[in-house]
Amino acid sequence: MSLWAAGLWPAFIQLLGYVWVTPHLLALPHSSSRNKSTSTLCKPFLVAYVKPCFSRTRVVLKIIKHYQEEGQGTEVVQGVLLGLVVEDRLEITNCFPFPQHTEDDADFDEVQYQMEMMRSLRHVNIDHLHVGWYQSTYYGSFVTRALLDSQFSYQHAIEESVVLIYDPIKTAQGSLSLKAYRLTPKLMEVCKEKDFSPEALKKANITFEHMFEEVPIVIKNSHLINVLMWELEKKSAVADKHELLSLASSNHLGKNLQLLMDRVDEMSQDIVKYNTYMRNTSKQQQQKHQYQQRRQQENMQRQSRGEPPLPEEDLSKLFKPPQPPARMDSLLIAGQINTYCQNIKEFTAQNLGKLFMAQALQEYNN
Image (cartoon, rainbow, N blue to C red; front, side):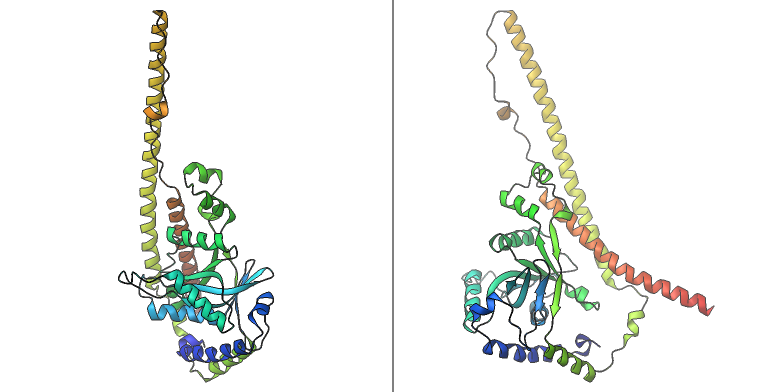
């Protein structure tokens, strides 16, 4: 029986808040805690690896709580991840959200807000080093240009940075959906050059499969937290698990298919733009070749009449090449389509398993 189904997780967060604050008040000075992992009985942690990565349970619960308080529908919530690097892994030990503000809050400075939050955490001896950021997503729709630019800024400044993607809708289906991503070294080089032309992407061998790399996540609990969860599970009522055998498909599959069709339409429009660019380029090359032939014939006629040849002209000024469409948007759309396909594959695999099981039971009864 999970705490989510029992409705006990708000109390669980409060209890965790007490358990976690106490060790920090008794901990060693922050400078020594940065050099090695502090091993205390009451100190759980979520790990996001730079090879794999560890994270505290508190981080996960804070992200979930943040979305439930401020996230609505397609609106995403974001925040900052704090922690430290221990050997070859990244330990995410804390986080805090970005506050919601409107256009009327013109005086709000996000950078200043982050600095004040990290300074306050430093004063109470809590890990305050920036190790990335988190964001919620709507049906897995997170592969966007905004996320690419943000993660590049973080990863360019802090090499170990990761972005945690939390999917509340998929989590509501019964399994926690939390993934960590980083930009691949190839894409980092392309973003540094800021050249997203088809030639540059082809030269770097960048495809939608080589844009993001998923980092394994390990969520760690302390022994005290494990005991607490065991006690809460014993006290909670038994949930009705018969709904797990329901053969009806929820609207989760239909929504993913609808979003997939929308992205395929965007991809087809982008392909039309690229084909138009290729036709214009080919047409211009033909015009340029015809112009050079006419120019050559005129010079031959002038030479036969004893006249000097015509001066050479800069063809790049006469025939300005058409502007190529940015291929990065196409790669992002392809990456998002791949994400939708993976979600649909996971969901249908579960449903097909239940259908085969139901068919076998029906044949057995007959």
